[in-house]
Amino acid sequence: MAKREQIYESSFKKRGALRQGEVISNVIHVQINLKDIRHQDSARFESIIHPWVIIVSQDCDLDWDYKARHNPKIPPSKLMQSILCCDLYEPQPNHEDKNRVVQNKNERYHFFQSCPAENDAHKQQIPELIADFKNYFSLSPGEVYARINNSEAKRRSRLRSPYLEHFSTRFYYYQCRVALPADHQSEPDAAKKQKP
Image (cartoon, rainbow, N blue to C red; front, side, top):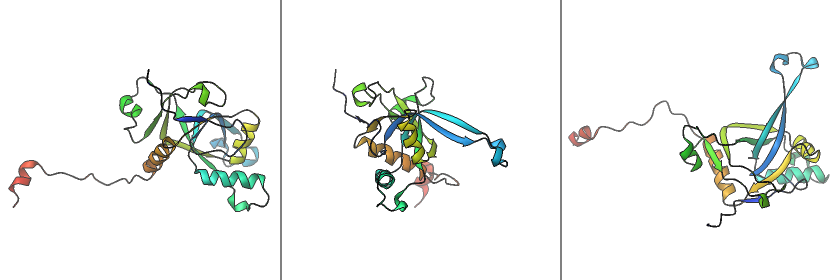
């Protein structure tokens, strides 16, 4: 059997800055119940559990944010208000475009092969996962670190280069797409031949 390419490396369980391309499990996202939006004094909040997410924010910003949280000499302007995350899902066998998704040929999705236990901070195999570039959200960095320190969320693994750059480039390309009012039209071959 051919040796698998080393796509992942283990995350730190608790210490160190969060990283772009880092996979975290059991992420809790709290939001206000929309029915209570006008009554904030008595508003109810809902907890949304994301079984798997991957961090999309840039490494340099994450690194400065972490330093600013631990070093009073770093200016507070380096703190981030939020971290951009993308949901990860286990592939569905009846997905309409599964073959193209698994080969990363569908621009909306990114496929990740399973991560072996030795490359997971908790020494458990991470299953095959798919990022849907339409499903992303932001979280407070302080909340993410607190949930990790409380062992609610778990830092698992992170993408190695060039797989990290491949993922982030595809994500940002999808976000930068431009909707056209109409597609370009090609003339029929017969019409092309009649023109001088």
